Length: 200
Image (cartoon, rainbow, N blue to C red; front, top):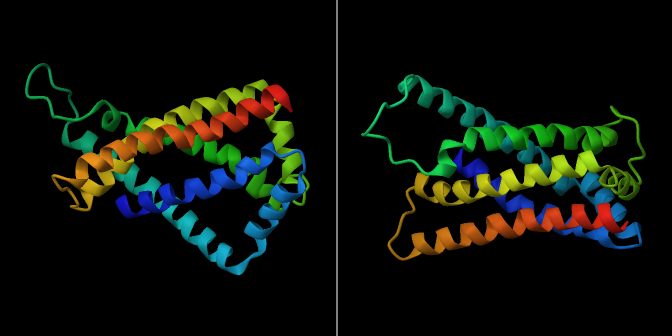
């Protein structure tokens, strides 16, 4: 689960970089990048790895949460509470919100590329701009990326802990980087959403 999560974390800056092209007035750079991502063989292999990581991460996360619930089906009345952070307690719920967004995202983009949903796979720029003009879509998008930030903060630091990479010097640095990453990545996606909603 930790390794799959790290792989997904590394993918997000790539996705954000491509999405920033939506802020250009010329649709060609974004559409060209989308075509490249859809046709280049190496990218297609990475795409398979990415989907595999998503499935593994989601399935393992659900399994771990079920095991936790079964291990303690009745909550503590008082005292002796496990030392878990606010973020770790709600990982399953922030993860569920992100999954909901991914399903929506697939319908709006990936399934169009596959021909399952109506739309022009050669002009994802116009599709994205039209979607971001819908207030409800923007609201869902912004809420999901807020929850993504909460999910990322705990996921980033806990992945290193799970892999046994705790270190007196590096662990505090990883935690600081987790804060920075979990703020900047969602903020970047949110900035695109708000800009296209208000100014496109």
